[in-house]
Length: 89
Image (cartoon, rainbow, N blue to C red; front, side):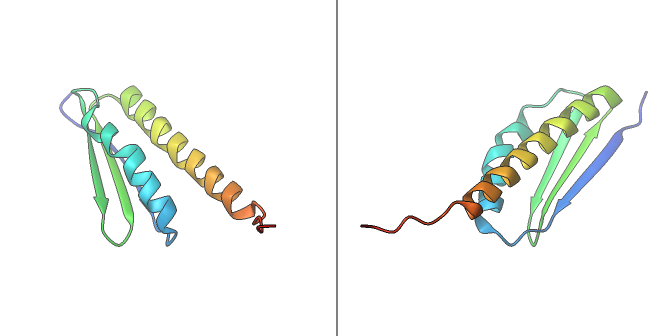
């Protein structure tokens, strides 16, 4: 098969803590993918992740992995935002 399967994710978020955490979490993984795949990561006005694979099962596995990282970071951000601020006594 000579074609590639492709999926793209666009994340527009102004929360700089989330953006920095996401980039630092996924950037190393963009260089460690199966030979049949490649990842394009763009971080200009929004985060854009493009996953291209020759095999659909590899595409699905990489997409699930990236979505898990994004979900975990969003959950952490939500917990941090809802944590009460402690005042010194």
